[in-house]
Image (cartoon, rainbow, N blue to C red; front, side, top):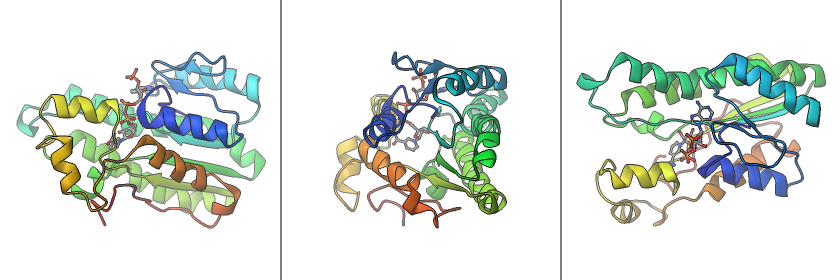
Length: 229
Ligand code: NAP
C-alpha cells in the first residue's frame, strides 16, 4: 500500500496486518518494519524498484491500497502551474503508476483488490483546492473506468473518499485557519456529531479487500459521517 507512514494510511496498514495480511508500505517516510520502502509515488522508477523488493520479500502483490496524498490550499488566481502539477502528480499520477505496476501480478493470479483513497471534496467541491479536488475527482473516475476493464479479470476497484478525518493533514489545515472554522465547529455540522477516525477508513478498506466484497466494484464508498450523501 502507499501512504502508510501517517494518518489514514498508517491505520489501514495496521488494520490489514491485524486481519492477517502481509503489508508493505511505500511512502516518503515509511515505517521501519523491514517490509516497507521509501518511494515517491510520482516516480515510476522508484515505485518499480520498491515493488521489486516487495515481491522479493512477499511474492506477488494482489491487494493495493493507494492512500498517499498531498493537499494544497491556494486561491485559483494565485495557483501556480507547478503547484497544480505536483498535487495532480501525487494524487492522480501516483495512482496510475502504482496500479499499472502491480497489475501484472493480479492478472496472473486472476484475482485482485484495489482501493483508492480519494476525497469527499470530489463530491462537494472545496474552495482554494482546485488542484486537489480535480485530482481526487479524477481518481474516482479512474476507479470506475478500471472497474469495468478489470472486472472480467477478477480484480475489483473501488474508491473510498474520506471526509473530515482526524489526521495530521486535517490538524495542519485547522492550524492554518483553512477549514472555515475549527474542528469543533465542523463536528456540530456533521450528522453523526464527531470527527472521523483513520480507523473508520481502515475498517472500510478491510471489508473492500475481503473475499466477501467480490461483488462490489466501481463504487465510491463515502466515509464522512453523513456530511456528503
Ligand atoms: P497524511 O497524514 O498527510 O498522510 C499522507 C501520507 O502520504 C504521508 O505519509 C505522506 O508522506 C505520504 N505521501 C505524500 N506524498 C507522497 C509521495 N509523493 N509519495 C509517497 N508518499 C507520499 O494524510 P491523511 O489525512 O492520512 O490522508 C490520507 C489520504 O486520505 C490522502 O490521499 C488524502 O488526500 C486523503 N484524504 C484525507 C482526508 C482527511 O480528512 N484527513 C480527507 C479527504 C481525503 P509524508 O508525511 O512524508 O509527506
